Length: 227
Image (cartoon, rainbow, N blue to C red; front, side, top):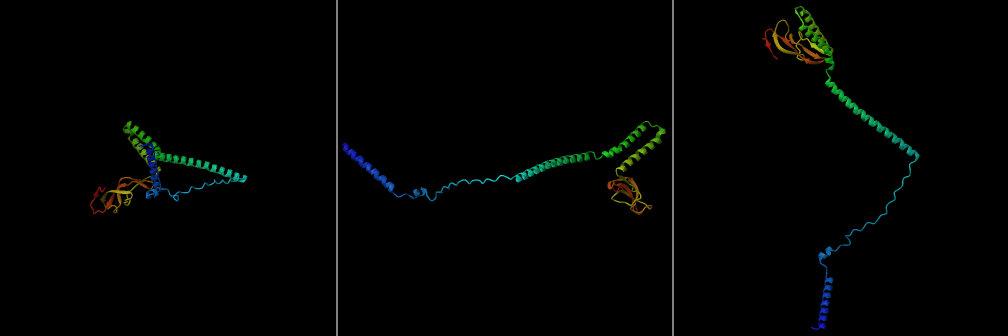
């Protein structure tokens, strides 16, 4: 094939390619292509740049306002100092009361024990006398023991101890404890005819009820050990 014929074939092929590209460009777009194309209406408009507002400058305080501010600051500082002192005083008071309460519980019997110490001394002297006693000192030893008993009783009475004497009294369940009933014609029914153990009160509070024997009518059988 000659050279001229080859050149003609190349020109013809180039013309066909150009025609094919023009057809593709002129062809209508598919729905997918249309959906992918950006819509100018959907684009958000860019906000317009606003100029920064100038802050309004406040006028300087007057001398009266400055004086008032200083007075208020001084008062605030004074109140803060007073508050700190009151908080510290309240904390110290709380600690002191807690310690006093603890000491009161720990040493609640201090006063009573202090008053019983002389009685303890008297007992020790009595025991020393017993160790060195002979037949001629029995009476003096008896007198010493009676003195110790009287001293102890007096000390307990000074702190508010009251002895309950139930003999001859009408039975009172709030102060007496009946251990038995005994038939008798010498006392009315319900009367305490014998006290087997003394009772005691601390001022108005019962410490121990008196153990007693209560009179029963002579027709009843004796009931013993009801406790």
